[in-house]
Image: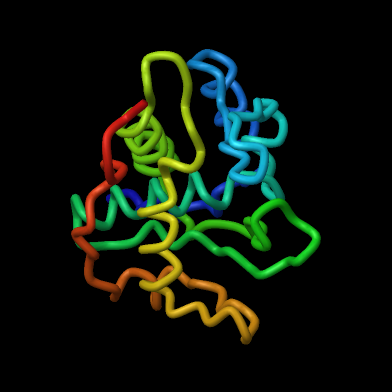
Length: 166
């Protein structure tokens, strides 16, 4: 009888490289600048960086997985005021990478427009992830562990952006 293989920690640098390839293969990634009232391109490097938009993409993927299975993927995010979103990816719970990547791809496809992926359209799931993990803007963000994150029940707010698409 063989011994079951131990799950290895997920390599966030590798995930970042794969997400960068996904971003490069898809429609342009944009963010809406509300001050200038225009869409601004986001490079694949920034979109996939652990201190760029990767925290948002992984949190949205985690929301997809949580809604589908009732369990979190255990994404570890930490507050960092020097980053694009104020959060950086520190890691993810040990386990297979397929659920993580497929969930991120699903979240991106769910809000992608024919001509772009507008980061702002992922605000709903990003806010839901922050509320689910009870992050308070005045306190340092708690880091989700595989155990603590897997006990959270899904928020069924959905991934479709509110309102009509321009």
